[in-house]
Image (cartoon, rainbow, N blue to C red; front, side, top):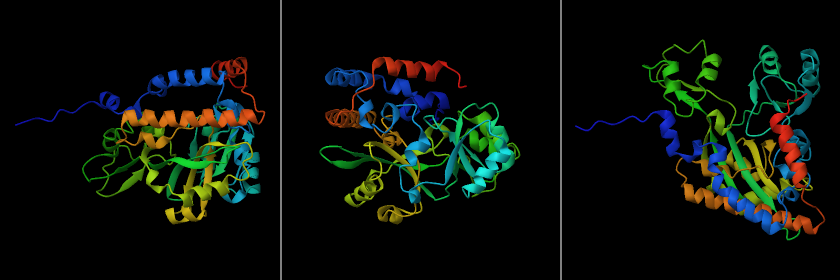
Length: 346
């Protein structure tokens, strides 16, 4: 009788590139990026792609600033303040902007979902702000059931546009079976395995309880891959009707030509009609066509998709250069990267 061998989580993750470290996965792409830089005769060839964003949206962009270009009906209520502001004044601003708990708080300048939290009450706000020394974006929490990342691009001269990627997000969830404890269900989920300490602290009161059969808990309300969200290929949703929706949404975005719209929508029907859409974040050249992280997506095909998007960045940036937008210098990029990596925020 054969015996099934159980592979430890940390080993099994290496069989799925969606769990590889970002820098490791992108090693082959560095060579293609170097080729494009030589072809463009500019190290930072990508920065003119989105002139309205700092460094084209590669890093260091102001989240609220770019969102504010959109029509108000497409964005959650929100505001930006420094983390040092007293809670009483923050509450006053929440009242002014007609925001109530729960809210989403995140660094106004930051990438890859770092520091993003759903805050359910005033008592949770102070621990979140503790030890932070930066500007924080406060947003109304949108409870629409569907979260998507839609990758839209357009050309400044030729006016060609299109959607090249849609990722559907499945939040980190456990479901009881009447036998296992909350902690055992969490530890059995490969997507939760790197966040055990965080989840134990968050769900301490339930940690040793046996969860009844059929009872589910959404462990993470934030739709980031590094928070345990499963990314699914949603490219079957792409059609000309949807392109026209994003063509309309993007009209006020002067100087923005390439990136991913992270958004929530009430239904797919609403998505195609351009209604009940809330864009929670707008990314630039740092955007990934995140549908490639679907567990069933082949590695070589993923690299082909990334090359396609890197080529789009190059082609859009070259059109913008014809309009007079020049790449940032190597010195500027290196100075900013050094400050971002090694300098503590004041």
